[in-house]
Length: 130
Length: 369
Image (cartoon, rainbow over all chains, first blue to last red; front, side, top):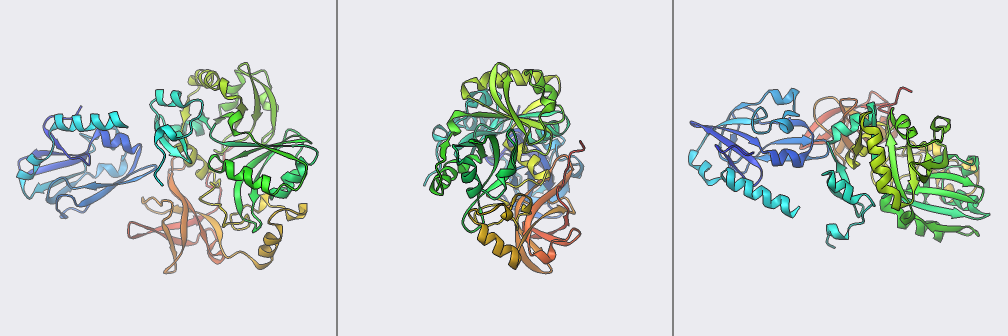
């Protein structure tokens, strides 16, 4: 379920690293919690993010959810397709519905995040206690 | 005070079924209720194009009996119940002495000596206390919520689906009328009412039959595209249809004149609780009016967002949400009367931005037949 080459946060974001670029999105668990996504607000290219900064919002019919930078970096690209098809966050949260790509300020930060197995365990525990 | 745990929340007879269907559950006014099953958007669209089935058993029922039943109903509500024929229902307000809302409700006339009131889930007990406290007649009042389950079948295909389970000729029940009959072997009050803006029915019956009725309705409707719908779609549907929600557009600080509900407020019917205050306000004029608005861009107004016009904050959004059928973002708010005209430009404060919006006529959505 959760790609083994991604890293994950407790706030349900994922990062996929390719060289010094990190692609960031939200996880399947997060999209399921949100419900039908209707609007995504992303930062401008060039925005400088520190770990934990709110970099955008994902809105479902009922709720507004802030998205937090899992690692630090400068935004180099945002997913323009999400404007027309925000619902892809629900249907393909780990793939087509990536949110932003950043130039990693400090690639070592990624290793501090959960791997797929740890995230799966984290999520399973949440679901069990729901 | 800490929030009740799930085990302390009240449950309808279908609670296990909602969980079996993997509905997302929420605490709604102390009830453990389904917010969505397949998703709010698909449930909303199904109700507008086929049918939706709603467990609304959390709603309250209050019964008024006796020779003076009408007198009591007239005294505590603002609409004119003397105009109801047997088998007819109307939308009304339960009023305070200030002419504001204790609740909104449906009043059904079962007979000259028996009125059946459907009230909001969260207000059931307060409404009952209020009616009892203001009962200066010989009428008896019963808090009957525990005696009824209620299901709503709404949408263009609702009648056809329900007809498959009853010999009662449903098409002969006019809008906002009701009858008693057998549905799927269960005695029901069958009302052509609803909270979605679509045609449809609300049926009331004893809770022990709830599981069977639900299962048979789901079965009957599955080939017609009917889906179970939760409170999320119930809210987006009523908002599109510009229907008020207690605690949002109406509460104990708002009057029918302010809320655009003068059509249910009949001071000419004679004395009732709040009548004097309402006549005074009618004379003086209101200082705020409920309007509907549409967002101009992609941003979504939410409940409680500040509303701005001409550089000043003029109110707050009472209900704001995407409108799935209309494919717009809409909302309602109270504004000063001089700004109420359709076409007036306003701004909604969303996360520090002033998002442009336009006042539009209500209802946002009206069904075509």
